[in-house]
Amino acid sequence: MSVIKDTYQLFINGEYTNSRDEKFFEVYNPATGEVIARAAKATKEDVDRTVEAARMAFESGKWPRTSHTKRARILNQIAAVMRERFNELVEAEVLDTGKTVAAAQGQINQAIEDFEFYAGTIATFGGRTNPMPGQFFNYTLKEPVGVCAQIIPWNYPLMMAAWKVAPALAAGCTVILKPASHTPITAYMLADICQEAGVPPGVVNVITGSGSEIGPYLTEHAGVDKVAFTGETETGKDIMAKASGTLKRVTLELGGKSPNIVFDDCDLEGAVVGSVYGIFYNTGQSCEARSRLFIHKNIYDEFVNKFLEKTKALKVGDPFNKETHVGALISKGHQEVVDGYVKLAVEEGGKVLYGGQIPEGEEFKEGYWYLPTVIGDVTNDMRIAQEEVFGPVVVLMKFSDEKEVVERANDSIFGLGSAIWTKDHGKAHRVAKALKAGIVMINNPISAFPGTPFGGYKQSGFGRELSIETLDLYTETKSVVSYI
Ligand code: NAD
Image 1 (cartoon, helix red, strand yellow):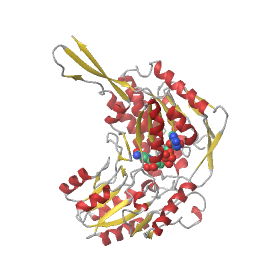
Image 2 (cartoon, protein in one colour):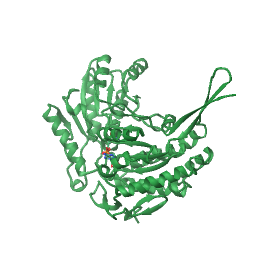
Image 3 (cartoon, rainbow, N blue to C red):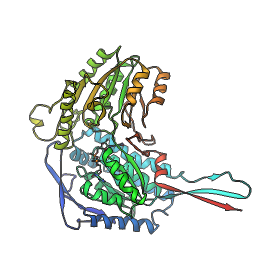
């Protein structure tokens, strides 16, 4: 029996309900193109009633006034139920995204740990007292921001939901979670789990529907206090403009074009493996995918040969096969975007060294596939080196010295991830300091663990997730000044 239901209704105020006009959209498996479920298509009226439910749940004070320790207990209970349902969550995520089982397992493990992390953190999170003159006395209170609209993308559905819902609940906020239309299923599964773990009705609500139709309405809504968004930079700009009407609190986790810098004094084998992982993990559909690979001229040929060898050895195919490294892309439209970028690279003078096409074979006739793709003869000013492809496409560039590579790495509108490979620790930390990016990985391709602040510089957004800093973004600071 499938872990996926035929129909997903909106989850408002602790109950499932059809959208007002009873419309649905189809949800399909990107690895096969088959329709696997349908989900409710919310209308503006549905947004209104969801905001009202979240507002009432907040104003009733039940959740915001629940003690820190009880909130922590409930967050831990959410994590415990997720652990019990681990296999179901993994299966649903793989069916909904076309990502590999290994990728889904890692991400869902992290989602679980995110709830545990905030359960631990909230117990010690609070205001402080400040030095004051004479008989004055000042302390601060950290109070929940209120009703939070949380709008997430399709690349890491459950993990992105956890990055948003866990800190909001920890801080005492109420939530309207809006997953991407491609991947609504695990958000609804999380809503069930929250309810079962003791989160009161109205505190976590989930709505689905067209981002371009209900997204702006939700973002402008006077009943929403904060918008936390992860997605494309252009959508982020629109959200920021719309949220300004009521001066909502906004956090934006946006796109990237992250540099990966390989110095000639690196551990070559480690750098090759880490660089392959850094771009092709999750079929390249990662905001911090290291898609610009800068290689020192002294090791360029040797590194590229090894990099190509490892890339060619990646197994693309059935996401449920444990041997598979690279799963499907999210949609036909996205496959066309990725292929369009490869064609553009060639027009710009780039040379496809591997990939650049849909893999051949019966198993790739259905679904949305693309070979891991390596492009040489690229300069940093080409569009292929400046725009986010959000697919398994890496461009190679040669460099000669540290100063020059830092300048070229920073020559981007984005500033999310970055990676450095060198055995020289002084150089590693010097370059880490000079890079204009929210995250720097040194001799390591993994960027996110519960507790590590995650977010961007420049047009990659602002605000940090996954960390103690995040709780500041879900709370207001009240300053109480008294004379004693
Ligand atoms: P997207 O911007 O198209 O959609 C993201 C979400 O916003 C979806 O739920 C969508 O329905 C909704 N939406 C669309 N238009 C909207 C509007 N006008 N107002 C409000 N909501 C709207 O992004 P996507 O294609 O789903 O995701 C891919 C993007 O996400 C990439 O650019 C990637 O880099 C980025 N991303 C960033 C991070 C990060 O932490 N920085 C993490 C993952 C993904």
